[in-house]
Image 1 (cartoon, rainbow, N blue to C red):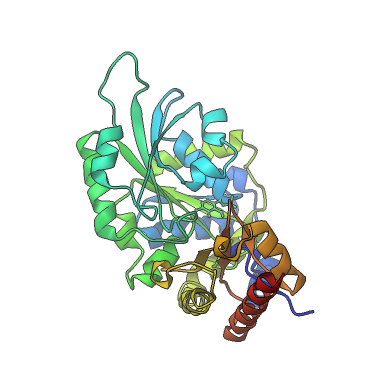
Image 2 (cartoon, helix red, strand yellow):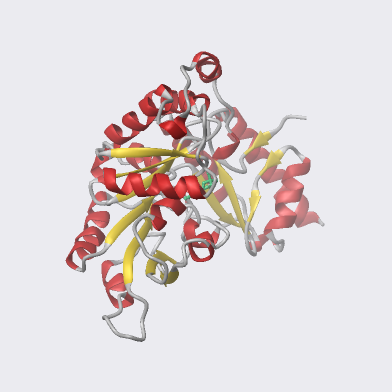
Length: 348
Ligand SMILES: Cc1ncc(COP(=O)(O)O)c(C=O)c1O
């Protein structure tokens, strides 16, 4: 049976070139700072992001956690968007392991308005935990891959600086935002103190993310990574495909965005399926199937029986993500499958 896996861009497999790079990578013990391939990846990531230094981590979750821990103290309050990945999907690590208190601000399509953040910032008072950090997410996963523009980021960064706060960006898919807005990624990163980005999503590397910021921050993050068991030895086998991810896989994200648009436009034509294709800005398509009288799980199960894999979220919300390996004819197959499933549901 034909399988079109649209659950996530994390399902991408490494390219042949990546596999060859793993086999031939120059290796050393990275805990001693002696893996030349890791050092090269970290220098490349820092340079691409316009910051002093970078740190390879096992995952986006670990990069977010070490980033947050390295610029807060236990008991601090952190401003997060109400649906932030850091808050919603990271097992509460920043509270459990970082000892931090979340203060949630609801955004519009993932973007927090500076005035809403301002309202959430509490004055110094013995009753309140002190706020030290604002976290933003670009692109925003639960908002369907929606983007912040540099000017929206600048507004929040300006507010943060006027209050002596730092800003961290969960930029798991920041290259998607940069490609979609036809801008150099530094146009975004200049408005944050620190960020993390993932190699293992649309960029197609098998493992790894990077935390990026100034050298002092990276030194602290490196200690936290070690504490969390993330000090890796011959990690050049992870870094080698990561270098190819950054150097060669960024521009192709455009194809994923075009495929996501095609998918969204087709889905919006199906009676009972609701979404606004204009909201699909990058490679994530979120749509609601409640109009068909089913919940997302039922829809996803029926699609899955016909080989099209999707993600079920709360209620009627379904998520599909485009990535390398998904071609235009896969999108056409997913759309005809969705039409058939919708017809079948209406008949039942
Ligand atoms: C926005 C965002 N941040 C962080 C992560 C965490 O990355 P990882 O799965 O590598 O831990 C993800 C993963 O999907 C994500 O979408």
